[in-house]
Length: 406
Image 1 (spheres, rainbow, N blue to C red):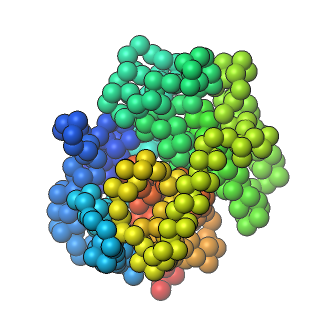
Image 2 (tube, rainbow, N blue to C red):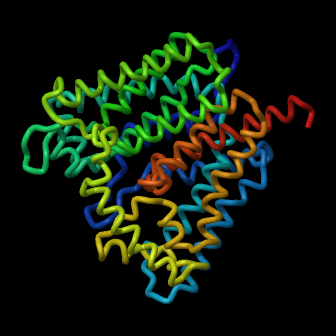
Image 3 (cartoon, rainbow, N blue to C red):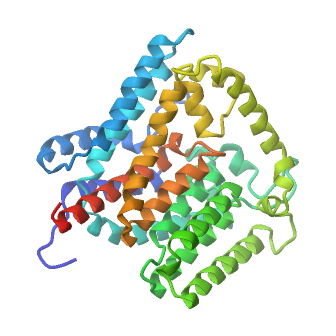
């Protein structure tokens, strides 16, 4: 940091918030009350800093979208034909919170924030490796305090309790969400301007992704590579491309070797490569749920059923597709608003043809792709990271426009 340069208050809070959300467990008051996420704990400070720095916030039409979604969710609750629970109203709060968080994160000095990201990443790597190698006490801590539950209880075991492939759960409580977390970091460390230090962090992040043995994240990485190869082939030289592809292949093999205890057990991700994933119980279960929800979407196609969380709780249903979930809850209007959340910044950045925006485009592709088989936006830590990426992207876009004199 240059002499005399200070870190502003939003940046300090942003660093603390990221550390707390990704490394510390949510705060549990009692077993009968949902845990409180760190964004909720810091929300009064976030609102205060937004108020004190109101003149510095650079508004765009996009900032209205989360608040419009909150109003629309309230409308769907009013028009739905079934009983409403208190938990449904938290969906309104969720969208209002997302809007406030987006405004707050836009106040961050990202040139300062990015200096802390490698340290945060390395801390997460250490925690995850301690968990992966079952360091005494760590997995019990993750199970009890980080919502690890059955994922930790059956870590490295099959449903019968026998030794099996390891799927790294980490602080996220779920291997798929943990894989998405490290996919975010692989995008952050993507060596746009090729240098070996950043390339090393990139490969480390990919190794962590593959240790989670998440089929969704493997598909996401393939989609990102295809996008880069089609639209940004000239980003790297042929030698650099070969280095990146070769590094990716080696990290996958290394992770596969470690996760399967030197190929003693069948890898979870291998079912994606040989096609057997399509016949697995989890995929068949998803198809059955999607078919059921699809039929119910046709009953209320415009405004949907509202949040109606009790229906999912009572029937033990997991949508595992955010597009279907949004259409079921909020109808075609809500689905359109959800897609606009991604489409507006995506189009803006692709049209700019600025290589500095490539990581932000990749983050949106990550969200769009993972939403096909998961609910990334409904996961609080992934939502926070996506919001951070959006705020960073819009600040970069506005800086680029200002530089051009627009």
